[in-house]
Image 1 (spheres, rainbow, N blue to C red):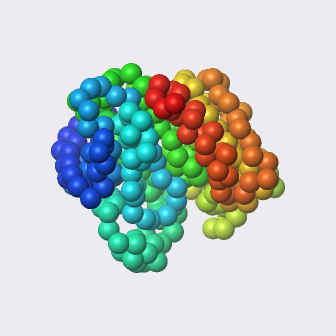
Image 2: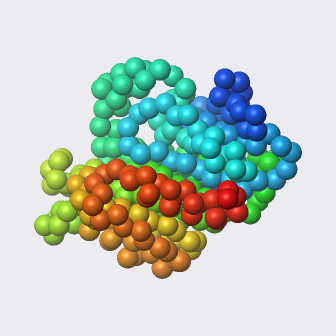
Length: 286
């Protein structure tokens, strides 16, 4: 599947966003093709202005539909950052544009074609995240050494999946990862978001096959690079037992930083610890 997608050229487009640039960082709205001609991912790319070679960080999003600002803060420390959306639409529009899609054509997108292995919504999304790695690796400013991927919730799942599938990714960080342990519901345990069988009824054989494949725990077994995890014990969106199912499957170097009281949100200390770990992997920051 991925080999087939990569036969489609990236055809990257980059538009400078002068109003978002800083004294040390150029900010671009970018897009590139993913799994077929005309199917694109969009994102915000931040590149240090100073000539040189830099580590890179791919940021993948939590569930929903929204605009993105890009990670200028990390780029100012001396790294390339790319924050992508997953829906194949520009990420610099007004919020109302995304609200209309969330309440209209893309409402419940995580359920689309969930009984079809190749047309399931996350099939294109995962390939898009991997093509984002392709895009980063083609940037002349990338140093070819440190490349991380990070996100929370849906983005936590995509971080694990991307790191598991692309050997050029050298580290990842997943905060309260979603899409974990779907079948726990069958065993009367809490399953992870989006709680397919809890909200949408018992699956037929085809849906069970598809959802089982697109389980974060399935990809976690394939990881070979260091990972940083964090979550709370009061998370009812991504219950901790579901996330442990994925974490326990990881055999590569890993560390878990639980914030026991946390629900499906971050504490500032948690954010700071996450960022410090990412910066350390890239050799940037203080």
